[in-house]
Length: 489
Image 1 (spheres, rainbow, N blue to C red):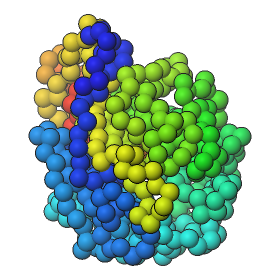
Image 2 (image 1 turned 90 degrees about the horizontal axis):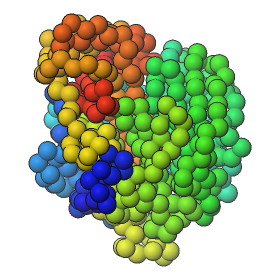
Image 3 (image 1 turned 45 degrees about the vertical axis):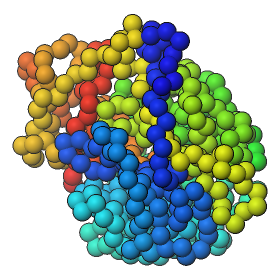
Image 4 (image 1 turned 120 degrees about the vertical axis):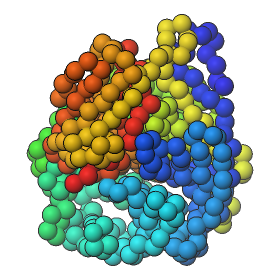
């Protein structure tokens, strides 16, 4: 382990576990939907384990990691004829995961946790991904309907206002910072300096929402750490995808009614400039930022930032934590885990035909897991977690499903003072993009002894359908091991 110099430092800096080897570089990762809690990650690279390539390669190399046993297995997915490198990833209400585009730019693959298998979805109306080098004006919006299993173009959802001014034209429309919101609206916070409101209603529309910053921030981080109040952190990135100094600026965005101008506040800088970093929101509302480079140079370990930072929304500041062992730059990932720890992995995965790749030393087919400071007492011993001994909802006796506006009744192992509750949507990650994650603090609470009745916000724009982690936090901020709860329509 990366051990702090004294036991007391654990509560201040956190602790990194050992490096975990994988048979692939985890340039993409998602959590497998399971009840009562998830125990597995699926990680993937490209059509080969250590390199990517353009064209119709028709397969993807995956690994599965069991969080409880530590077992790692490998699988090749070829039945969907889809090289999923550099895709979009979205989790559906029923736990399935939709992977769109990538090297096979028009393809869609759907992972079903009930069968642990991938099936082909319908091709998108517009090819989107690493191998599609068409003009940016043709890649306007479209929407997938799981009920009909169809893609529909949204000709009014124009991409032109959401592009950056990257010197490389094919990079200008990459990696949007999207947040699903109320009334079929989507807020786009970046990486372009111009922000936008998109609507998925009818044929789609877009409305300028103002300016986030003076520069574009490609491959910066973005996370909605308090969806109840529409609060978003953005930080880092660089004006150009490659060969550009990263920035350490941070902004705080608050959104409210769709179509209205958000509030943007410049925050104190991060300690380090970061491009290609990742962010995970924690159960207590803090945000863990890992990896990245001070100068964006893809496929390399140059100018790596090994020291993570923790954003604290209570005082809007960043503080440094225990350093990682391994650089996590371009093609790295991170995810919050069901027990409140954070996985980070990957980096490297250069083009198979490139003569400019730095070599295998910059490939990182591995990962590591961080235990944040909230898991430790001030003397460095393990903090006591609240114990969830029972869970029911007003829609299911096992508490596995609930509707927005519904009620969860949580039984804790013993009556404790000062407990708080939060739901965090289960995430997915590739290329610094995690549009699935968000946090909702639960504040409508009624207590009777060791039972707590929690009423969820009633808006599905806040409580996006799909799998969520339900965490109970002690008065000291230590989270329980989560229960998986599916929010349904």
